[in-house]
Image (cartoon, rainbow, N blue to C red; front, side, top):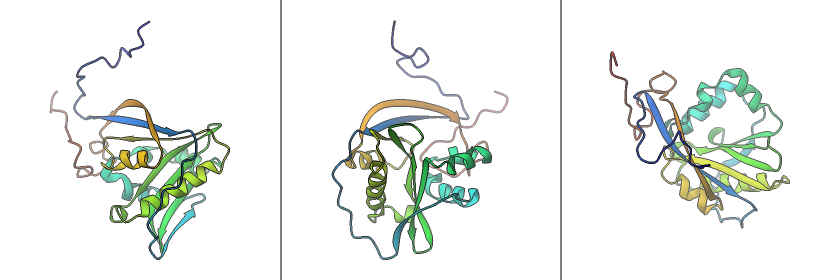
Length: 209
C-alpha cells in the first residue's frame, strides 16, 4: 500500500483564504547531551517553578512571548482544559524571572510514559540574544533528564523565531519529522491582534466568495 498521505499530495496545495498553513519540524534527543556553556547570568535572573499559574497571568506571558511568532493555541483553549493541563502534576511550568518580572516560559510535559515534551519555551523580545535563552535551555535539559525518560522532544515551525530551529539543534535535538498544520488565522477570528506576526501574510476571504 502506498505510504504517501493521499491528503497531502506532491506539489502545491491551495490553502483557503482565512486559513494559515504552518510547516512544523519535530526534533528529539534520546540521551542527555553535554551541557552548553551559558554566558554569565545577568544580575537578577532566576528560574522559578510556577505552580498552579493564574490563567490570566499565564496567558499574558504566553501572549507577550509568542504573539509575534503566532503562538495562539493557549489563547483559544477553553479555560477548563487549560486549567487541567497547568495543574496536572506531570506538567511542570517554570518562568525565567528578571527580578520581579517574568521574561521567559518553560513548560515540560511528562504525561506520556518514558518521555518529556518541551511543550513551550520562549522569551519576551527584549530578552532574546542576551544569553537568557541558553540559561533557560540548560535548565530545561537538566530538569527533563532528572526524570527516568528515554526521549525528550520538541516541535517548532516556520512561523517561529528564525533562530529557533538552529538553537534547538545546537542544544542537542535532532530533526526526525515534518508536519503541516492548517488552522483558522487567529488574527481574523479576533483571538490575536491583526498586526501580530507581520511576517505571516494575512489573507482575508473575499466578500461574497
